[in-house]
Each structure stands twice: as structure tokens, then as C-alpha cells.
Image 1: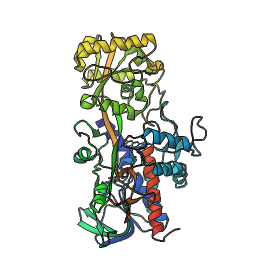
Image 2 (image 1 turned 90 degrees about the horizontal axis):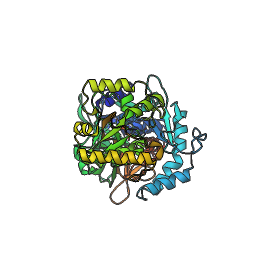
Image 3 (image 1 turned 30 degrees about the horizontal axis):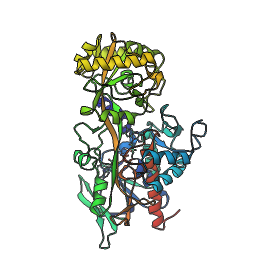
Image 4 (image 1 turned 30 degrees about the vertical axis):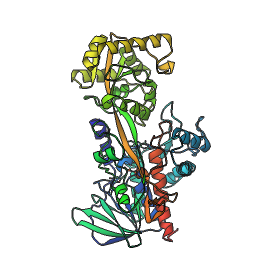
Length: 507
Ligand SMILES: Cc1cc2nc3c(=O)[nH]c(=O)nc-3n(C[C@H](O)[C@H](O)[C@H](O)COP(=O)(O)OP(=O)(O)OC[C@H]3O[C@@H](n4cnc5c(N)ncnc54)[C@H](O)[C@@H]3O)c2cc1C
């Protein structure tokens, strides 16, 4: 996972750095807190509607999680019309609500889905290169990903392009300058932001409108426990970005209502000497493998590997939030010659051949990977991965019988992925569960204004992106790609527009 972070960091760090100065006694029409997917789009939308905008960013670089992300959700977009199974907004709405057991906010979900295609048009109009791509055979074709922009791609391309737009419109970015609190007047209206910089210490910015876009709380062990009810020891962000729920807490401190919280989980291997998105990494979570937990027991239909979120959640439920993925030499040959059944986001497309797989396997074994082993018997494998031999023996035997029979009586895996394990030529790679980011915390109305404990808007305060609850339930939709990034762009740009319009600045 370290390699994952390193690779992605290289992409994100290519997002241009802006000036890092700060001066006390500043003022703006709109202060945006955070420069990720929601903050960037909010700043552009507010500025192009005539607002003087300041963006505060805690990190030394812009982009947040969005710079590492890949695509946004949209349905009935112009780009998607060719997809045979594209579906309609109505179908999408029904599925979203059913999958959330109607715990998502139906009015918000409808608003987001109906606006999602326009989101794509808006980004393209602003120069973001958007393409349609189906992520996986079990996912609906809702993914709209980003091509190259300057020296960046994926989410970083959107961020860089938006930043160029924002700077052209006169938006000022202050890096290494976290917001630390909101300022309220005696009527309870938000009238400014307290910020902190190394040069000036704590200082205040007077603001007519404030937009919170701080990207969730995934890097705070305390909030993951208290708000997300999960244990940071076994449940960590795969890309730590110093997002500690600041905006959510600031809003609570001025009387905001608590919303529900959720995580975007995914599966991955922590094994050393396995390069992120390399051939062996890709091979680590394929639907044709046999997965066992630390008791040596099969626990899932491995076909869920086709949706990283489902796989992440299933592995999370196992003791220690870990499992082993077992495959054999025949499957290695298949992946090298026929290609992988499951891809990795936009980085490895499904069907990609893995020609270096054997080489990477040999290298990882030679270097003594701590999470990847080879074995020529079940007994040897059980010993190497530290699971009870008898249980593993039974799991392999039952699984192989199911493969012979062509039907999986245990978890009903699609027969095309039932491939018998040759016990004389086995490999096993460790799987862990991680999360990309959190979502939820604040409740907002359809104008993206933050609601207080009486369900009334806190004057002048907006919240967007991952800091908001209700666009999905606590169960992130694993069947339709791009909900969170899509919602960040959607809520960000509309909050920016609304803030400017509320100031009578409409252009
Ligand atoms: C590897 C990876 C891949 C992903 N792929 C996808 C995908 O394909 N599709 C999808 O829908 N989602 C994806 N996500 C999730 C995606 O990152 C989020 O959907 C999106 O970034 C949310 O946007 P946001 O603006 O709310 O938060 P972010 O983009 O994370 O931005 C928040 C910003 O606020 C800043 N900040 C925090 N606190 C403060 C403070 N006190 N003061 C000032 N600034 C502050 C942060 O530093 C950060 O820059 C992925 C995430 C990761 C990590």
C-alpha cells in the first residue's frame, strides 16, 4: 500500500502549487475551505458569477482526495448514450434508493442524479477532458473519467484545469493555511473564518459566504472511532491526506446538525515487494481466486472482486480485516495470456494481459515478500499463511468440488469464475481492507446550506462533497461508479453559484 500512496502522490504532486502566503485582515465575498473536488468547483462557480473568492488549503498542494480519484458518476450524459446498458435517471434513482434501504435522502439523490449529466457538460465547457468508461462487468456504466490535461491525468487533471480556471477568474489560493474555526455574529450568521498560517499565526478573514469542502475525517483515528464506529488499527485510509474532519467540526461548533457517516472501502494487498497496480497487484484480487480468512475458511463469492467496495467490505468483516487470495499456476498463465478478469480503476482495464506476472511473482518470492507465498501442498500453504491446515484442506476440497460440478453451493459464484485450484502449484497473497475516504457529517438543504439542529439553514454557511450526508446512505453504492466525486463536483459548483447569487452577483 505504501507503493500505492507513492505512485498516486507523484500524480497528485504534479498539480500546480500556488502561492503560500497569507495576510491578516483579509476579506472576500466567498471563502472556500478546501481545494479538492468540491472546493475547486465551488471557487470557479462563485468567481465566474462575480464573487471575490479566497480558497484556504490545509496542505502544501491543492487537490485533496480528488487529485487521486478517477471518475464521476453521471447518467444520461451525452458521452454515455452509446452504452447499451446505460439505463435511465429513473432506474438509477430507484436502484440508489433500494440499495440504501431508503436511508439516503430521496430528494437529494433525485436532485444529484438529475443534475449529473449537466455536471459533465459543465466540466467539459471548462476544458476538463471527460471520457465515458465502464469500470467493471458488474457495475452500471456511470463512470466518467478524465484524460490528460497539461502534465496531469485522472482527478488531478480536473483539479489542475479547475485551478487554471479559478486563477484566471482571480481566485486567491492560500496553501498551508488551514481554516480553524468559523466566526458568527450576534444573530448566529457566519461572517468569517479563522485561519492559521506559519507566517501570521491565527488570523481572521471576513466573508459574506463560507463554503465548507474539507473532504471528510478519514485521517483522524478519534473521529473514525467516534463518528464512523470503526477501529483505526485495522481500518485505515489507503491515501493519508491529513483530512481530519475540520470543516464538519467547525460547523458543529456553530450549531450544525449531525448527519450520518460512511466510508468508501476497497480491497488491496499490503504484501511487500508487490508494486501498486503492477501485474501481481492486479492478480491479487481476481474473481477466479479462492479467498479464505485467518481461520482457513472460505467466506465470500470471490466474484465480488469485480466491485472493489464489495470486496473491501467483505474482507473488513474477517478477523483482523484480512484474508488470503489463493490462485494457481494455470490461473497465472490465463492472466498472462488471456488477461485479467477484473481491472484496477482506470489504471488497469479489465481484460488487460499481465505479461510480467510470472517475473513479478518470482521477484516477490525471491525478495521474501511478507504477504505472498508459493506452496506445492495444502499443508505447506497452511503453514506459510498461518491458518489451520484442516480447515484450509476442507475449503480447497469443497471449492474444487464446486468447480468440477460447475456450481457453487456455498456462495453461488458465477460459474465462469469457478476455476479449480491445482494444489501442487499454488500461490497465496494477503488481502486487507482499506478506505479511500469518508463521507457524511453535515446535513444541507438543496441549496447546499448547512442545517442547524432545528433543521434551519445557518445563515451564510454552505457544505459540499465528502463533508455532507444523504447523497447516498452509509452504504456507499458499490454498483454505480463515481458517486462521491460526482457529488463533490455537483454540490461544489452549485454551492458556489448559489452563494454568489445570494449576494446578488448573478452573471
Ligand atoms: C485513490 C483514490 C481514488 C478515488 N477514486 C474515486 C473515483 O474514481 N470516484 C469517486 O467518486 N471517488 C473517488 N475517490 C474519492 C474522492 O477522492 C472524493 O470523492 C472527492 O475527492 C471528494 O471531494 P472533496 O472536495 O469533498 O474532498 P477532497 O477532494 O479530499 O478535498 C478536501 C480538501 O480540503 C482540504 N482541507 C481539509 N481540512 C482543511 C482545513 N481545515 N482548511 C483548509 N483545507 C482543508 C484537504 O487538504 C483537501 O485538499 C477516490 C479517492 C482516492 C483516495
